[in-house]
Length: 392
Image (cartoon, rainbow, N blue to C red; front, top):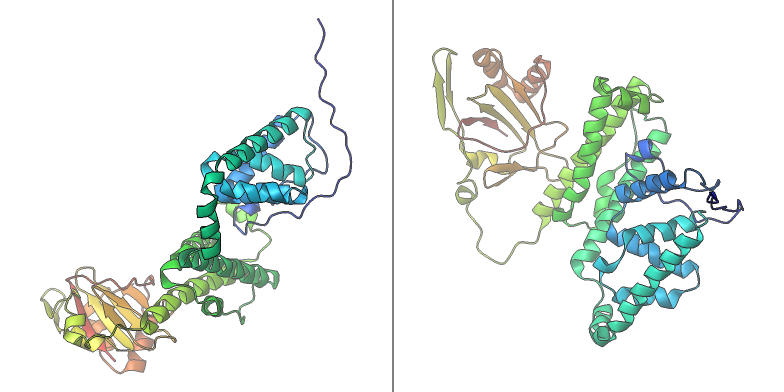
């Protein structure tokens, strides 16, 4: 019986392109883009499988297509790269796109791999040539350029990259207690649309949750991943993330507040706050509470407010952020508050504690800070059991 010979892949030094940096927290576990200084032989299939898993985790179909076009550009096939623009995205084989990219990162393709890659490229180019009848439509689209939404989304992603860079610089500086980073400036510089900010907020909330787990110290893998950071550095990093989220929230408020109004009659404040759920008064003999609330009209445009949730015995303290300077009531939600200074705390002795809150502003703030209870960031949503105690 004749034994099959193993494919011999020459070990040669070749020039590779710079590694991609997806700026994602998971790179701490999966590393940066795979490189192939040593060519895989016996373990080739497992190495390639791990490489495919890396690309699939951090990049999507459009990224894969872009990388394939980049491969053709570097191979002096710019005409072919341009021609691929006429092919529908669903026609691309993402695996072949990754293979092309891996070859630029130093992987020497076997004869079979090279043949399959070229066959797939030929298929795509044939499809592009068959679509020549739609050239006119394509040319018109190119002249018109990308639509406004695409441009604004691109700007948002660019701003997201800058914010990620800020975090990197902050951590490289040793996660100091004091810093001069201003995330909101990056958003303002690119004039990001308010409705696109959640694209960034979701990613930073995941970072926040991750570092909160590190602070708790219950996840051994996370603790090990950030073992290079001291407890103070971890807490400072979490504060930095909170700072970014606060600026993202403030930016939305600023954009909404500065949005040019339509030419129409001014809406009465009574109508603006009409949908805000609240209770006018509250009495509880067992708790010795007899409260009379303010009208929501006082809340709209105020800069500080105390709200008591009678059903949950929670006291809400809202403080307007430095950008909007005042609250805005929209539907059943309060907007324009600072998530860093606004808090919710559960009251153990509501009658005594609310009496202290009803005193002067400085005394109320000092007393509230000293209440030993878990502090929660408010969301601004109201319910029928909430009573407006004070609004300045």
